[in-house]
Image (cartoon, rainbow, N blue to C red; front, top):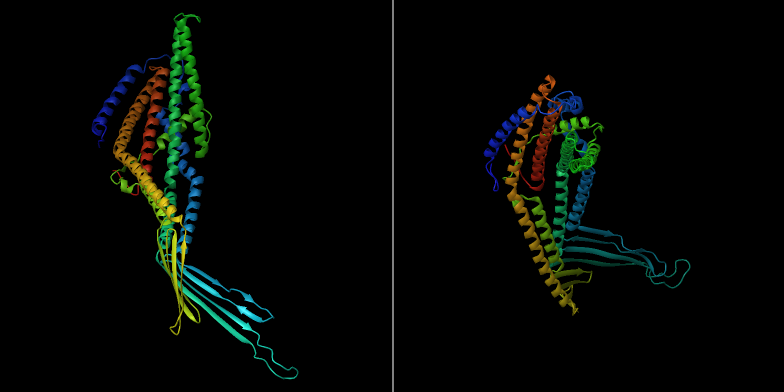
Length: 521
């Protein structure tokens, strides 16, 4: 696999093999150098480095990394929030969908009883609306009234009578539909918006395990980086300290420039070591708390834990970048939908014309009304016809708002400017995302190269450490020389873990940021 900026992957692997041979030769020649001022027990655990790492892994579990990820996921507040957000968006989508499909209203109306003139009155009514079906509306209402009859003459035993009680009924029904308006469009837009929010929440919930794992990986990488910096600071301090002692042995006094320069370098290295220790202690403490692991006080125990954690990071193949295209990019899709939604919302708000037909029926006549609305002007005409075919009435209305035409012009101008601005912003995001996609093959090649190099270093330094351990046990290699090899081994293990972490983060980004991805073999 080759990328646009680098050489072939095969040549890099050949370079790794050459490097491994040179490291073995280097430690074979230089490993015996150094005095025995420090004992092996002060530098490293009793077992060789590789064996110590395996023992620590067995103590904490070979699936240490997986247990850390599971612990973080089980206690993740983001996961609980993702579940709640998905439930909320599901309810909002269901509500909006039902509201846009049908609206039903049933009422008993007014119920009244009065002894003076009107004895009883009831006015039930009902209405049904279908907003998504061209805003079709129907309504039905009626009024039933019972009145007292006129009082008759005479009284007493069964004399004259009156007209008796009477019933009056009125009917009011009607229907209306938008022949041309933005109502249906606005409801379709609202449903689509809620659906996209629901889909995003579902995707976020599905991706939450990957996101939590990525957070663990990033925290782990920071901790490993801080530990490597601590190792570098320790090594630098030891070198500066030895240099200061060498100056003293050479006979320089405390007031000499040479000694004062060496002492200053040692103090600077000591300050840098203190900063590195504080940084690592903070990263280690935060990671241990978030991972639910036992806090280890001794530096040697911390190192064993870090080696066990580093070796437990799985070495996974990289996902294929073949399907990572602009059309499958989730961030770009969301940006495109956001731009489309903003443009559609402005179009609905600034819809120029509305044309509607309404009808109304009573027991005596039927009425039809046609209305049309433009910016600043609304015209309506109504026609009432009796059921016998006679024309009862005809009428119309005109509403004029002089400044509305100017407002509409300004809204249209702003709409065009916003549309152009949104298109430009989307084009910039698309360009950025396409650059990210174009860099994916090179990024994958770099990760493979780093992992191959780190694996070769780890194997080489492990073999060198075992050889030096045997020499240390036989007394032919000094403890300081073995400590240097052990330090190189620890760095190599951590570097391989960091390469595996980068590969896992690459896979997570590909799964989260793209709608589909394959697995590289």
